Length: 242
Ligand code: CDP
Image (cartoon, rainbow, N blue to C red; front, top):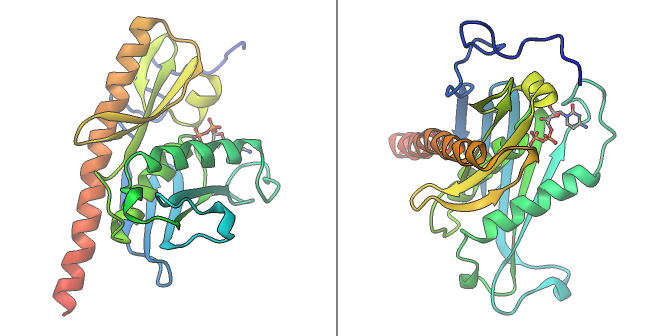
């Protein structure tokens, strides 16, 4: 596509003033919903996401039950008002794909064998979208699962890296996602760096791919610290209220 916006200026700064390895601002709050077993509100740049976890509870309808483990149903949804052109409400191809990859990522880290015949429902609602919503949604889901006390090997976290104007950068913003060359969302278990989700949109050489993967993992570690602080803050305030 012919570009008339310069994604990186002569000083190496991106459109929003970030350097190549700088993340957008992340804010996380755990336990924001009263009815859910666990919940989280997260802002990541211009993204605003709510995650609510219910379960483990009996999987219904019964034919969906697995006698050996719990099933994890992540449901990613974008509010009609979350994007510039009103989004038609309800599931579409894109939200089904994102729900599926997030469910599979979470299944790898939740100790599902402890809850046979059960379901763990993870609702992710995108209220405001500005690129990188699957990473923001998965990161919020990780906090909501921890808040719900669901046994996991670790708290899952995600971050993307990509290529814009020929350079590998972390955490693409909206114009970078639209006019850039590649986007690589990655979710990991931060304790082991095991990869839970990896997708790629666009083209990267092997060398660029390796660099982008390293950068995305670095970003995951930054987001992971903010997740942990959000969970500690919630339990600190509960303890103080007692
Ligand atoms: O959000 P994420 O980067 O994980 O997924 P994407 O499919 O690469 O979408 C990139 C961005 O496009 C979203 O974050 C939204 O800002 C925008 N988008 C939109 O404006 N309208 C849609 N129906 C879907 C996405």
